[in-house]
Structures are given as structure tokens and as C-alpha cells.
Length: 301
Image (cartoon, rainbow, N blue to C red; front, top):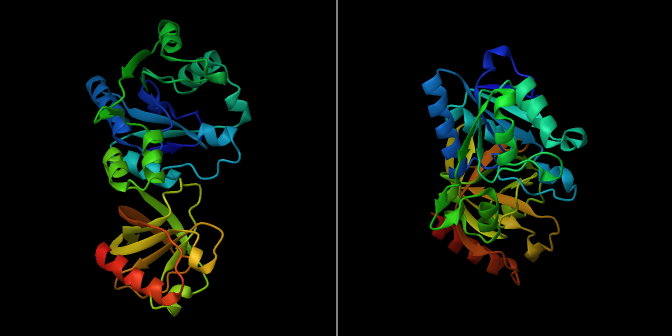
């Protein structure tokens, strides 16, 4: 899959099928759009690509919204590639681009830069300054700019519309299994192991400390997890929170990998969340904490 950091793409991918959206999480609803896009591309013997925005528009407009994403760019690209997308355009969402009118977006981006033959969006798609653009505006300019609009209805699960917003809601409530169901895979974060106070080692449970950069914060507590290091899978347990027993302040993900004792400082890990075990709580002493951790590990295993 070819990745472009601008809307100007190589001529090879002109006259393609392009699906437009944030694709944060690349959940089952997104996969439906991608599946339909690939079918149209195959039928017309042309390429299929994604136009996505970086950073996510809401994070651009709200500078205080630091923890919001379901996946990072690396994960998004990897998933799109696995789903058979031919190219991905990561449109920089800055002040200049945010001020594009819907007409300018259609003319400059869709027509002049991408030279799109088919445009795929969900039927609730909004775009352009003040979100004035919608599917009716896209339909209005079809003939003028020589593209065909294809609408994809949002996918539902148990009468609820699948969306990145709903998945974030589930994660914040610790409903990992529901979030994973809508994603079509286990939710995961990628981060580097940072130095800690080595408390885990002192109490007999060595942990890798990972700061969750930009990702949505899940419910504070203990989780059964998978840990990927150099494409090798290990089982483990993780605690996300502020470590109230030790009067911690900043949220941190602490991961204990079962049967693994190597030093992973500054190494990159991917942590998959499998099941929520319990909420974070403060213990009166270290003995109580150790007893609870043993119970947590038994449950996770």
C-alpha cells in the first residue's frame, strides 16, 4: 500500500475509488465501506484508496483533547494494508485546511488533486468549514467534476450504530469485550517502555511502564492483555491508572508479562486488551496489594 502525506498523489492512482473519513479505529463500520470500495474498484479495474485526516479534526479544534484516538497512524496504516487498500492519503488537518469551504474541498481535493472517479462516504458524512458540506452537496457537484457518489449506510450491532464514538464510550466504561466486538479485533495501544520507580520489582511483580500517548484512556483498573514484542506474542496483565496506593498522579499503563524477565526499557510494545478484571483501588499496605495482584494474575491466566 502506498501512503501519501498530501492530497497530491501520483498519476497511477488518478481515476480511483476513494473512501473519505477519519477511519479512527478502523472498526466494522469502516470495514464495510472498505469492502464496498474494493468491490467497485475490482468491477471497474481501478485502484481503491482512503482519504483520512491527521490529526483527527476534533483534536485540531480542541487543543486540550490530548487523549482521544483509538489507534495511532502506524496501526491505521497497518490495518488498511491488511484489508487490501491500494493507497492511503493522510491529509494534514491544519488551520488552512480547516477553513476550506465544502466547495473548495470538492474542487481542490476531490477533483484537482485526487481526480477521483468514485467517492465513497457514509450517509451522515459532513465536511468543509463549519461542517456545511454533506452528501447532498457532494451529489450536487457529481456531473461538474465527473465523479460518482456512493453512499454506505452505517453498520449496526444490536440496534446500535457502530461508531468510533460508541467504542470510546465502551472503553471508558471498561467494556472491553463490547469495544472489541465493534472493532472486529482486540483494541490495542503501541508505546515505548519508560523508566519507573521499580516498585513492581520490589514487590515481586516486574512491570513495563508505558505512557499512553494520544490514545483514549480506558477505565482505570486491571486488564488481561496480550503483549507483542518483535512480533512475538506473550500473555500478561496490565494496570492502567494513577497507582493510588503509591500516591501516583499521572495515568500510566503498567504491564506484567507472564514468564518474561528481559529488560525492555525503551523498547516498543503493542498491548492488546482482552478483558477487564477489576477497577483500580487503593490498598492500605503492600501485603494487601500483593495478595490482590496474585488473585488478578490467576484470573487473567
